[in-house]
Length: 245
Image (tube, rainbow, N blue to C red; front, side, top):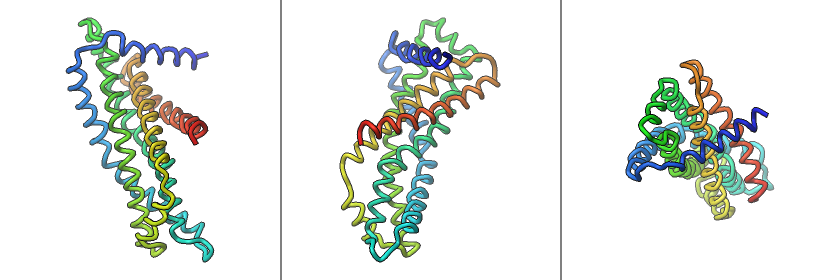
């Protein structure tokens, strides 16, 4: 029963963001700031994770498939497809759920317990829209960009690992990646990225906005934001795969 209560409050929170919108330029200024925080601020960790996940996947696939009967370009095709369909969007967004989600929840939660949100309400400002909507828009724009970067760097890591270990050359990897490339796979990855971005930003904003108590509850809200976002991402991953593949 508590799940349905919280889910209902979550839906009402989303509806409330659009009930009394502020001036357009207010959202533009805050959205650009949040795009910098979410996108540029997360770029370094995305780069590191993407390169190493591509490299490790290449080595593991090669360990399982090295055989005189299997052409080496097959390794490149499997790694590139895996990075595009699952590794880059899902792993990247799970990491962002920890970094971005906890930051959003703690920021809004701190404003709630310090009564800054109450002050916004007193001034007649739609606090949920003013605080959460720019973060959601920024996430919907920047997280898919980070996923595209992750896909590219995963393949770069695969190429580097293949050449460094002598398993396959760059030409063999790229041959396999080109032969197996299907445009819909990239489109599917972007659909997943947009869905995960919406989950991360809205769930984290909701957890922060509904915080009550003091500093201890802010930490609990940040933890809930990360856990709930991760579980929702994995659930959405299954649903999207079932519907679109």
